[in-house]
Length: 152
Image 1 (cartoon, rainbow, N blue to C red):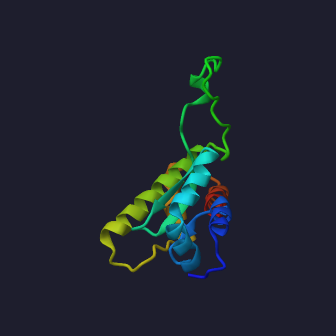
Image 2: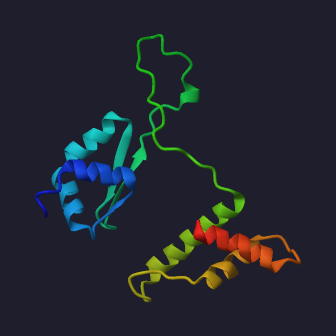
């Protein structure tokens, strides 16, 4: 583990995205200073999710009290913190795409015969998604829409 990498490096990296076990310096520092890093995010209403068996860690919003459930904070309790991470609704086709990808990944993990990584071509993904689109005469339009999903 590189001594120049501090817990602050790990915090900044987690704010930018997940940390993977392959990044030995950051992953080692995350483990060595777990309490300090976890407490830092706890103070701002977030939590660090760490899965050692899968080899990744990421930050997510801590779900305390939904803002819509709280009517008044006049009783001396602290108001909930505002959201740090933005929530974005997925479209119907984005949702279907994510569910299908998750199913593919679960099947791959159960069989584990094909290697360490799951690879699917754009054509495979297009063939998987096509039944979820209405029957149109313009196949190119459907293929463009599916390609846009894949590139997102």
